[in-house]
Amino acid sequence: MRCEELSERMPLVAAGAEWTSAESAHLAGCSACAEEWLVVQAGRRLGDRAPRLDANVVAAGVLARLRTEPSPRPAPAGTRTGRFRSRSARWIGGGLAAAAALVLAIGLGRDKGTGNREGPVPQTEMTLTELEGLTSAELEEIMAQLEIDDIGSTAEPGLADLTTEELERLLRSWEG
Amino acid sequence: MTATTDDDLIREFLAGSEAAATQLVVRHTSSLGRYLAAVGADPGEIEDLVQEAFFRAFRSLGGWKGHGSFRAWLFRIGVNLARDRARAHRGLTLVPIEEEEIVAGADPEGEMGVQDMVGRIESVLAELPRLQREVFLLRAQQALGYEEIAVALETTPGAARVHYHHAVRRLKEAVR
Image 1: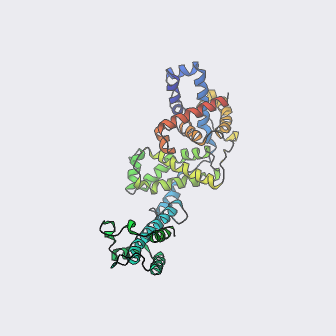
Image 2: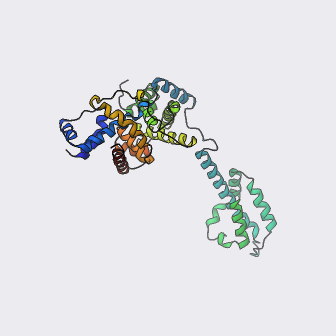
Image 3: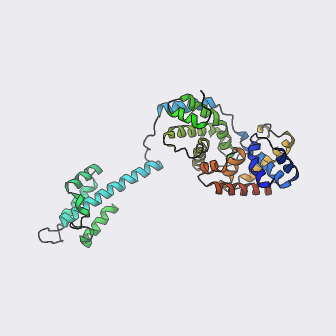
C-alpha cells in the first residue's frame, strides 16, 4: 500500500465508503497519511453549517420558473451576452455600411466615362451620412441594388482603386 | 419511476417529466448547498443560488453535450453563480462555523480531533488561492473525481490533481 493510493481513497471513505484492512493498517502506521486523513475529514465537514434546504421546496420553485420561462430568451441589453450581441449587430451593420460606402465611394467618386477620380465629394459625404441611419435590412437592400456581388472581381474596382481621400472617408465611416 | 442514474432522469426530463426534474433536485440540493456554504456564500442566499443553478441547468439541458456528469455541470453553474454574487458583494468571506452547528461525524474515535481541525482548516482554506480552495472542497467535501472537478471548475484533471495536493500540503502544514 502506497500513500498515494490511500490519499486517493480518503475522500470516498470520508463520504461513507469503508477502509479495507490493508488501508486501515497503512493508516495506523503512517503519520503523514493520518495527518492528511484528518484534513480530509475536516474538509468533509466544512459545509455542515449550510442551512438545511428543503429539496422539495427548491424543486417546486425551479419547476414553477421552468413553466413560466420554458426556453432561453434573448439576453437583455447590459448582460454579457446582450452586450456581445449588440456589439455584433453594430459590427455587422458597420460592415454593411462600410461595404455600401465602398461601393458608393467608388461609384460616385469616379467619373466612369473618363476614369476621373476627383468625383463629387459633397454628394458622397451626404450619402455616407444617410447610410448611418439605415437599418441592416435597408443596407442589404441597397447592396443588392448595387450588385455588390461583383465587388470581389478583379474586373471591378476594389480598395486599391480608391484615392487616399476616399480611403480616409471609408475609414471614418468604419470608426463612426 | 424506474430511472436511477442522472442520465436516465435527464432523458425523462427532456421528454417532459417534471417528476424526473424533482428527483434530480432532491438528489443534489443538499450537496450543492453544502458546497456553496463552504466556499463562503451568504447562508441567506444559498437557497436562491441553488434554485437558480438548477433552473439554469434544466433550461439549457437541451444543448448539453453530456461531457462529464450532471453533478459536475450543476456545480459549475453553482460555482459561477457564487463567484458572480461574490463580485457583486465585493468580497466573499468564509463564515466561521459555530460549534453547535457541527453535526456528528462518521468517525467517532477521531471526532474531537476532526472538530478541532474543522475550524483551523476553515481559516487556512480562506487564505488559499481560489482554485486550490475550490478543488479541495470538491474533492474532500464532495468526493468528486478529478474529471468531474475539471468540468466543474473549467480546468484539466491533471491541474485539478495538482491543486488538490498543493491544498492538502498547505493545510497539513498549517494545522500541525
